[in-house]
Amino acid sequence: MDIKDIIQEKNIVYKRTDHLTDKALSFCPGCGHGTVHRLLMEVVEEMNIQSKTIGIAPVGCSVLAYEFMNVDMIQAAHGRAPALATGIKRLNPDKYVFTYQGDGDLAAIGTAETIHASNRGEKITIIFINNGIYGMTGGQMAPTTLIGMKASTCPYGRDAERMGNPLKITELVAQLPGTYFVTRQAVHTPNHVRKAKKAIRFAMENQNNGLCFVEIVSNCPSGWKMTPNQSNTWMAENMFPFYPLGDIKVPEKKVV
Amino acid sequence: MAKVKGAIVVNIEKCKGCEVCIPACLQDVIGLTKEVNGKGYHYTFMDKPDACTGCMNCAIVCPDGVITVYRVKE
View 1 (cartoon, rainbow over the protein chains, first blue to last red):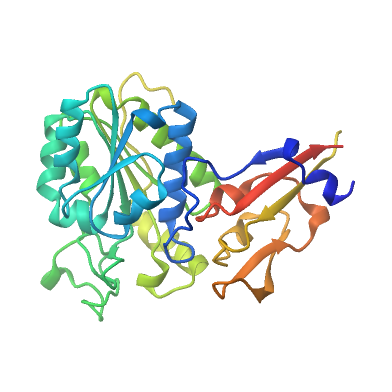
View 2 (tube, rainbow over the protein chains, first blue to last red):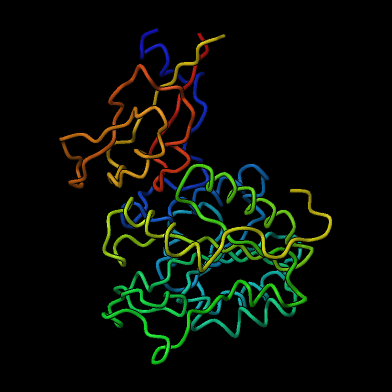
C-alpha cells in the first residue's frame, strides 16, 4: 500500500487536539510542559467541558498557558493560584477550575496558599509540574532541587546543611484531610503519558469531591543543561528514587 | 492476521527537533532530517516508512503535539 493511501483524513488515529490554540508552544525543545498542556486539553475535550473550564496559571514557565490552552484562563500573582481558584470555584460551583503551577511557584512562594487550600478541601484540581529548578528565570535552586543537584545558585550541588532538604510537597498535601486524590506521575515515555492522562482525567472528574492534586515530575533540559533525552534518563535515574511515581492518596471507592 | 500499516505526518514548522519521539518509537521509524525548518531546528521525519505500525507512541509523547498519526488495516 502506498503511503499516499494511508495519509488520508479517514485514517487519522491521533492528531493534536483543537483545544490547544494554533500558536506554537514557547517552551524549550523536549520540555514536559507541552505534553501536560496537551493532556489537560485532551481531557477537557473528552469530558466536553471546554465552556465550563476555568484555568489559572501563576508565574513561571506555566505563565503562558493562557496563550496555548483554548479555555478561559486567568493569571494569578506568584504562588497565589489556589487562592484565586478558591474564589472562582466558590462563586461558580458548576465550573471546572484547575490551577497549573510549577515547583518554584507552588512549593516555594505559594506554599501557604497550597497547604491552606488543600486543608480547606477546596473543590479544585491542582496540576503541579515538578522539575526541581526555576526554569524561566535561569535555573536557580528551587525547594524541590535534589541534594547534590547543580543549579545556577548552587553551582557545587545542593548541600543539605546550608540549603536545607528538598521538599516533598505532594506527600505533605496528602496528609491533609481536605484532599481527595493525590498522585505523582511523569510524561517522559508513552506509558507514563497514558497513566498521567488517566490521573488528570480522574482529578478533573472528581474535583467536586475535594481537592485533587496531580504532580508531574518533569524534565528541564535547559535548566539542567542536558539534551532532552539525556534529561529524561537523568530524571528516571535521579528524580524517581526521591519522588517515587504512583498514587499517594486514593479515595476508597476508586477502582484503578 | 491483518497487517496494520501506519504513517505519520510532522508539522515541520512547529517541530523543535527534541528527539523525544525517537526512543519512543519501537520500530525505529523516526529519524531527524539534515535540513532545518524556519526556526533553525532539525525536524523529525519517517526514516523507514514501511516499518510504521501507527502505534501513536511518538505522537502522545511529543511535547509540541506536532505528529499526526494515520493507520490502516490491510
